Length: 236
Ligand code: SAH
Image (cartoon, rainbow, N blue to C red; front, side, top):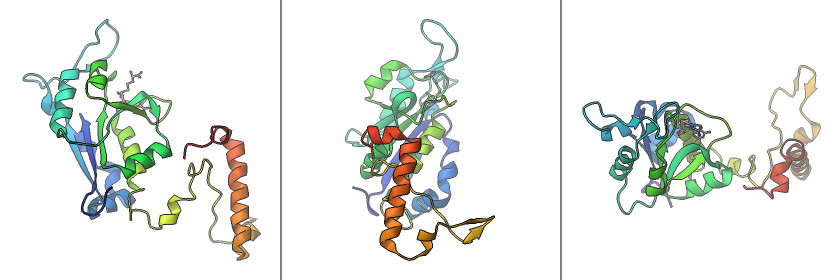
């Protein structure tokens, strides 16, 4: 469990520590960081580089394009960042990983934090993945140029779930993916805009009717856009 005395701890292993906190230093995640609800420690993999040039990568065995992050350099960086009793999961951002879900995000947020390795170039030497028990996590079926933005996506999703981070605790419960469905539509003032009125039920004050309408819209939108969430039973 995390709390004010034991903040959720994120350690990032990257070749670009100056990218952090970046957008995570603003808004909800930034406020939570300033408040001490979570901590962020970016560490430069290059500090463990080899030789005068602090080299971190080399050409792929077997040939082919690009460069590969060395297993010895990465392992040294991971070992220096984690004590033997560090209970945090070690994640490697990777397009080959299991796609990130709200359920995994919630489980991570309920734990002590995470150690996150950001790949670059063609990726990392396969041996360090097993050698340091890295869990590969993908943020979607597309290829980024590095793991940093993927790590920020994961961190943003986790941090907003930390106790006291969201303005209203309830806003986490009705959301998309919670309970295997997408969220109902939202409206706010003005009541009439470009000939479109807010659905009458929402301004009528009948809370039972509002609840039923939202449930019905949520079901319809999920059926139409993401039937896989229903068939799959929902991962949230
Ligand atoms: N050659 C690799 C892609 C390397 S992209 C392949 O074809 O699988 C360089 C780095 O960006 C990766 O090591 C990873 O850390 C990060 N990355 C790229 N796409 C990602 C994704 N969809 N999810 C998470 N991390 C990703």
